[in-house]
Every structure is written in C-alpha cells, then in structure tokens.
Amino acid sequence: MRPKRPPAISRSLSESLRAGDGEDVLVTGGAGYIGSHTVLQLLLAGSRPSSWTTSRTPPRSLSREWPSLPGIDIRDKEALEKVFASTTFDAVIHFAGLKAVGESVHKPLLYYNNNIIGTINLLEVMSAHGCKKLVFSSSATVYGWPKEVPCTEEFDLSATNPYGRTKLFIEEICRDIHISDPDWSIILLRYFNPVGAHPSGHIGEDPRGFPNNLMPFVQQVAVGRRPALTVFGNDYSTNDGTGVRDYIHVVDLSDGHISALQKLFDGSEIGCEVYNLGTGKGTSVLEMVAAFEKASGKEIPLVIAGRRPGDAEIVYASTAKAEKELHWKAKYGIEEMCRDQWNWASMNPWGYGCPDPAD
Ligand code: UDP
Image (tube, rainbow, N blue to C red; front, top):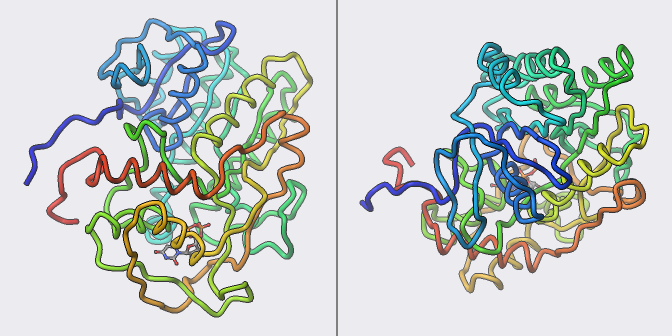
C-alpha cells in the first residue's frame, strides 16, 4: 500500500478569496470537485486572496496562493457568524452540500439537514451581515424527466429523489427571499453533467466510496480499480439505446461562475435569476466511453444492465440564456473532457488519497 500523501489542493470546506475587482467572495465547498476548480479559475483570473490562514497550498505551478479557512460546517451557525464578523464579504458562491442521489434516498434527513438547514443558516448570516449577493449551485436534476429537449430555464420543475428536492427547495427559498427583500441579487446555476479535470492534472474529481456518476466510474475502471462499467439500460429511444446527457468540462463550468459573479457586480438589476450551464449537446453513454477509450488508450469492459430507477432518457441544455445574459459559452468538447479526465486519473489513480481498504 502506498503511503498516504496530502492532497495537492486544500480540502477544507471553505475558501475565501478576493475576486476580480477586489470584491471579497466566500466560496463554501471550495475544496469539492467544482468548488476547487472554481477557486482556481478565480485565482488564475488574477484574484488576490484575502487574509485568511492557508492550511494547505496547491502546487506553485497552479497558483501563488491557495486561500483557505479552517474547515467550517455550514450547519454550525456560530462558526459562520464568526467568519462573517471577521470579514465583510461582498458575495458568496455556495457549493457546500451532499450530492449522492442514492444515499439521499436512504438518508433523506441527512440531506435535508445538510443541504437545506445549512443553506438557511448561510442565508440568515449573510442577511444579518448585509451580504446579499449569492451564486448557488443548482442542478439539471430539477428538470426531472424533461418532456422535451433542450431544457430551457422556464421548464416545469420536479424532483425524483431527496437530493434533487433539496436543490428544488433551495431554488424556491432563494426566490422567496428575493421577493421578501429585493436587495438580494441571486444567480441560480443549473449544472448539467460536469466531467474532466483541470488540465494540470493536479485537481479533479475524487468521489468517496462507490462512484454514482458515469465518468468517475469509467476512470476507476481505466486505472484498474473496478473490473467493468455497468451500463444502465440500452433500450432507450436514442441512437445506440443508452442514456444521453450534456457533459460539460469542469473548467468551463467554473468559468460560468466567474461570469455569474461579474453579472452580480456589473450593476444590473438581477433579482433572482436562473441559468443553465451546459454545452447544449447530448452524448450517449457509449459515445462517452468510446471517447474515453480513445483518450486513454484503455479498453473499458462493459456489462449491460437494466435501466437505473429514476434515470431520464435524454437531458441536454438550452444554453441561449447564459450566452446572451452571462456572455458565457462552453469552449470544450468531449475530447478535451476525456483527455483531461485521463490526465488527472493517470497522475492520481487513487485520487487524493491512498487505496481505501473498503474500496
Ligand atoms: N450510467 C451508467 N453507468 C454508471 C453510471 C451512469 O450507465 O455506472 C449512465 C446513466 O444511466 C446515465 C448517464 O450514465 O444515462 C449519466 O449518469 P450520471 O449518474 O453520471 O448523471 P445523471 O444521470 O445524474 O445525469
């Protein structure tokens, strides 16, 4: 067994940084998959960290400074109070939350407690300190099984599991607080399927335990941690019978947050606005596997199984609103997504840690 080595990038819960024009922005969940890439993009965009202690630093090649707060649980309101009492934040990007669909079905209260109570705490503390600009991580899961594609932001919303319901409820909470207090400016970002990793290969996705999502699973098969990928259903009404999703490079997704922040600070009347972050293109499971095989040179053995309960057939985004109003558009295709995911996987076959005996 290899010795445990420290992660290349801080894994504490929250990151504090100074964005673009000197605004102080708190990023909750800044050590997670999308959070860490967003913190990095903000730093690389020339942002300067504010004076929080740095518990760990990323490789110098990635950024000069990696600002981090000691780990904070957003359910701990007292701790949040202390953070907001010591720094005047101009905005918050709120990523922190649990996200495993299957786990949410078995432990709904854990999800409601973490995601909803945690967010309410955060919103209350923000409000008390006059910080009323928010970017929230929502998800395409709020479209449920869409009646048609591409999904536009006006579609009816639904949820098929407790995780999805937390996203849906938090969106509604945000709409309500804006109605009650128009000083709030809130951007809800509905992510489609984030994949890939930073091209440096130093940060990427490292799910704990059994991966629920397609690409982390494919990656673990490629490095020999799993024998085969189970394909959930090949009898959908799609070209090859497998499910279709809108995969988006995590760096593109992170850039979408920077565009959202810019909108929060550009003086426009925002209210509570929602944007899809996707590429607008649908890719099937088999197409994604083929692209990964090409990028990695590894064969991914497949086992065809039945449909996964709750899975939609085809989901992809309409990107028109984000393009028009956020001036943001995804730059990368599945080739770059698979290239960067393989780069991260081959440099870090066990993610940030050593092999887990329970793995
Ligand atoms: N999928 C699969 N095997 C897996 C994980 C996912 O065949 O081990 C399929 C899944 O049925 C869906 C697609 O890959 O069609 C994307 O699934 P994921 O869980 O990554 O995203 P979501 O379904 O939440 O959009």
